[in-house]
Length: 185
Image: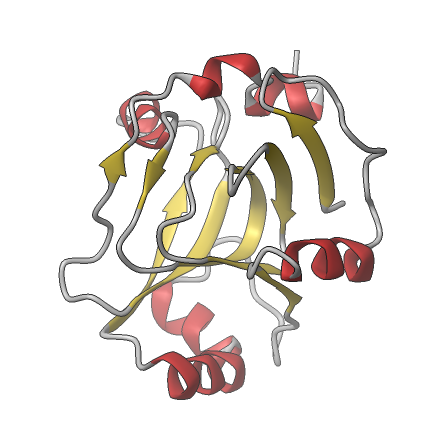
């Protein structure tokens, strides 16, 4: 289940958790963050490849592309047995910003976005069916857990894809990682 928890910058809870998707979307919209639910137009198996996934969400992908003019759209899948799972996880764990917005749609599995647009930090647990769009220049980081298990559609408006400027703030150390947040032993 999708979840939003809001903390102060030292990691102290600032509000009760939100579990209702509409309430989460409303809270995030105030920050300029888009948060939506999408439904596939056909069943997908866990082994669905990029072509199958993009076909199942073609209507939504085309609508979003018409709105933002993406240069590329792809599907990334990361499972616990991936030989570079730890390396890939580490790439996103420190606070960073992008010159462009970051858009992800979770086909399956889950991941945790940490948004730091001001004095508070918003922990957004994205689950299968969730689309999140983090605006350009919003400091954030992402954790997929020690045993990553997700498939997502990634959208890029710049030809180079994912480029980050790391803030060096160290703020991520004040917050639970994905495993602690979701209660993985």
